[in-house]
Amino acid sequence: MQLIAKLIQVLPLQTGMGKNGEWRKQDVVVETDGQYPKKVCISIWGDKASESVLQIGNMLDISFDVESREYNGRWYTDVKAWKVDLAMPSAGGSAQGIPEYAQQTPPPAPADFGGDSADDLPF
Picture 1: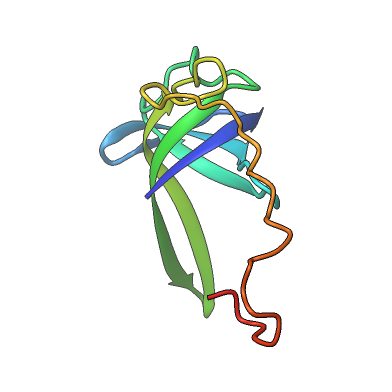
Picture 2: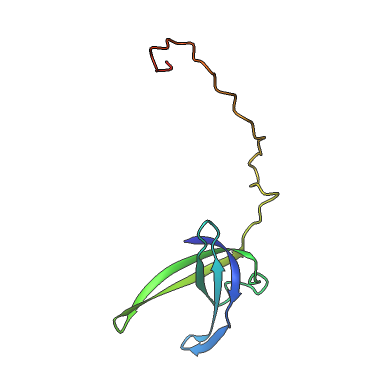
């Protein structure tokens, strides 16, 4: 899955040792755009994102997987990023390659269709 969202919080880095060596996990909170913005906490494992990308206010392009697991009769869901990049900014408010058109006013509606007044249909 993919999401473009604004980075609003970087949580403390978590590290530890496992059977495969040292691990790093960085949780971040992003906010989606739209009429009803949503906040999502996403886990970034290892070195999937550089510190320069993880700056508050950056728009991020995040590729992620959602995974749920059961533990003691309860379900837990993780959102794990596998790629994090800066989102491409739009140039001048319009997408590149899409021409801007001047807004035109529609022509006025005719006052009379010139048909028989007994028939209400315009055709």
